[in-house]
Length: 250
Image 1 (cartoon, rainbow, N blue to C red):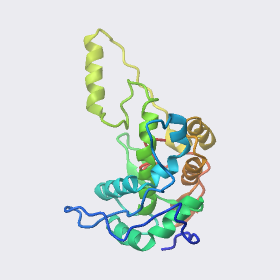
Image 2: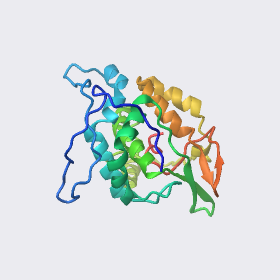
Image 3: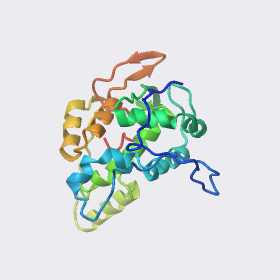
């Protein structure tokens, strides 16, 4: 399995330690990266500055380690390269340096997602795009940083794919509305929404909040990574794949 190679690592960008982060339950499993020394948080850091330096936060040791454990805990099938979740740790041990260097240099290229179809309740099929395990790790790291930022923009009446919210919460809200005397329910759905999202418009909307162009560029690469269907590559000029950690956020 190949990864884009960077040049020599610069101390001002990356630092790696000889020891591994250890957990008695996980026995030395890790993502093993260090916060870039140039990134320092203070009480005076404002929102604009935070959204201008998001890549540093995404690639921080703490965030990448949390992303690794989340991907590991979610398990799931492998992508087009065949790598499984339990193979991610050995891969990171051998390729973390060039992986991170490629991300810092803007040279990382996500792999196409693997097309999988699952049946829907109405008898139709839902198309999923399964990213590689490495791409899932990076997507998860991005999601962990962006979700709290965009969470503040959602309606208080929104429950889908929201942290600390569930379908049960939506049902309880519906019960309250009935008790309050509301008698009408409007049911609407955007047909094939994920398949037809305008990517340019999506990037524009993200850019209104996210001022770190490096992160916007990385998300755009995930959007345009393409799809593998029965061994054949298909471009993805529109829509967003369902199946990766970034999907709910997008």
